[in-house]
Length: 102
Image (cartoon, rainbow, N blue to C red; front, side):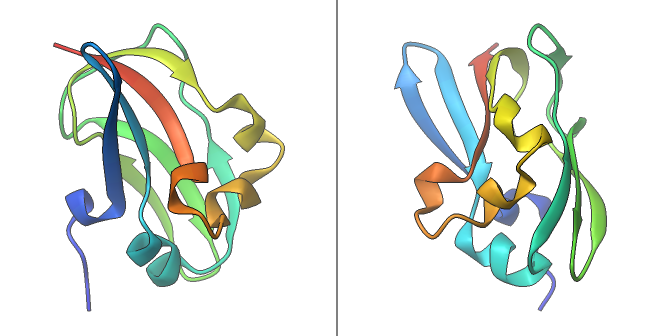
């Protein structure tokens, strides 16, 4: 089964016009063990369907496009040294960034 890009992410409103983006359990299962994450940069402006993050995992290497447009206001920087954090059993712990949506 191949998922489309939007199936890879969950989003959650954490404050007014701020959305947290993370990796779904389905994406974790499809990718396998995540071994590298190219973490985005705070302040970066994104459009929907523009690369948010690059991931290398057991079963794939892929750029994943942002499901939202806006400005990155917070990034899960520990992912750079600990990409396995995206393999978290609790999906809410597998977050990438917070975006102030347009």
